[in-house]
Image (cartoon, rainbow, N blue to C red; front, side, top):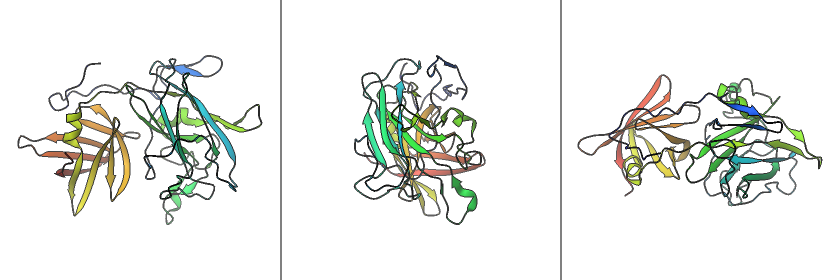
Length: 295
């Protein structure tokens, strides 16, 4: 794929693919050329989690589970070796470890030569995102990020069939999540086991100079700022000191997160000023101007 020109070209690169796509059952698992769908980053991602495969803490009362699978290229068949797979989730008490150096229930590993990964952890539980809002319950879920050169970094979540709040959660119940609501089975060793195979997508490569233009601090008014930070081939969006979203480039000077929002479209002015329109929802957009760059 030829490198896209970020500022000059405005045509939107067509990357929209059905959540149901061209998947088929080969007798053992699903194969196909439909990329695994994305989900929101959530407010609790921490870069730099240690490489470890067993996340269970001593004395934990959570239900042990093995999460395993394979990472494939965009054809859904070719395994990806040495891909970095990171997962993170809450503990059995609905708590994320957001501060400790131990990175509890956070870990990463590199895939084997045949593209396989496997974590031993506990099943997370549902939690209330806003203690004052009874409608904010999220179903049990595990966050995942997969990073590999030449493929678009994947940010996603997996849910569990029959799980409480799956049908009422706006992300778990979205059509894009249909193939990420997974069975909890019992393997030959008697362990609870969840299998999640991932199909990556090709990235739209962007030159380093593009990221130099769009990274930095943007004033969005009312003494509020939004910060954009490059991380691999993703653009992290940070507000109030917390990572809020991971955006991938989709063309037309636009980066998109999760299941469509937020969406950031950048515009380079003739005087060198960089402006951004951040669409938070279908009917809510914020506008900002770059006030601090990093290089």
